[in-house]
Length: 527
Image (cartoon, rainbow, N blue to C red; front, top):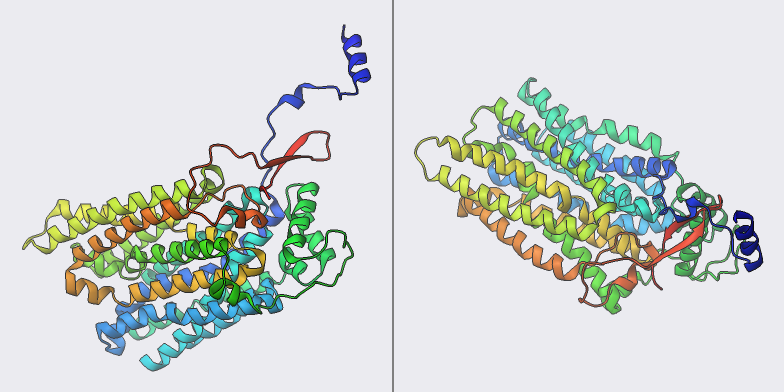
């Protein structure tokens, strides 16, 4: 019988089936080379995180040592976000000019100089100069790291790898908090200078390892270096077939004919940013306009939730909640940093499993609840003449809950989402616009928090943030489509209208041979 079936199959021309043919396709393992490249690139965000975290404690000692006012404290804390706008804008053009990898090196060099200047500051004006230089470096790092990571990652793990950016921001914040606690034992005039100057160390370490990273394959194609791009794609793709498909898609996006396969070809028009701003701002297509709204919106609402107020001024918030000891306040801020870091690690494993939209919407819902509860607890404390233990406990618990809910979705989402939705020709500049909106909003929030809570009470400030979070949930529900599993070249087709639901299934998979006689899967979008 078996022989007869074998003959029948031979006669019919159909390949013989074996048990493994009926098994569901296995999900590809994480590409170790792409993982390493993404890890090294996104480690640059440690610089931003460290600056935010260390400044929260350093402000206490800077105010005492330099005798500055609360207004000057606000400006010192938040001005680096406005300075980083210059870096974000410049990084878009620089990365199209010299490449993504060397732009990361530029970011390290600039931040190193800024950290040294801050560490040797003798007065407030000198310190502000250091903040200016460091801010430009932060802007460079914030823009280029997620772009490089998204462009080098295979579609199956792009969300996981791109979310490393926020992971290392949180690692940097935690390191800053720990630095505060350790250096608090030093004399006041020396402690805050060491806190800020130590930021130069990770810049040197990161710059030394970036030179071993490959260039982005998409940038290489934009320069006509197809041979180099193919070699990088072969190393960073889940299979040889996926590498070929990714190269074909990038060539199409760059306007290179499919039949051109030489190692170096003539690109119809090299992109160094010319005409891109007009296509983004002045005459965008419906899809590009929608993408830009989504990008700016997700960055704007991330910061309007008040996260930087919590991170930068957590010692003051804990003081308002009834914790008066400086040592206890710094320990409590370490708990904030630890909570943020732990939950951001959870988010990295969920992006490519359950999608961007579910994480964002559930994260913001939790933020609304925790912010409103925190506002309630702080209001009770503010209107009481004695210490109310349950209100103190509620406030501390809700502060930690807020950073946990934020980290599990809203924290990493803007970087992941905005770095993957722009078309290749607009990616560097489009991402820089989103990061500029992020840093501008962060600067406004962090430079106004003290004045805000003095004007409407500390509880009122968090009620206001809860209201903004509620508005953001509605925005995300109607404006953000799901991007999980889509190739970068397929993103533009998802945008252009505001009528979509959660995808019930994805029929955009194309089976290809993995070279072993078994079927694998590569995620492709409908053209």
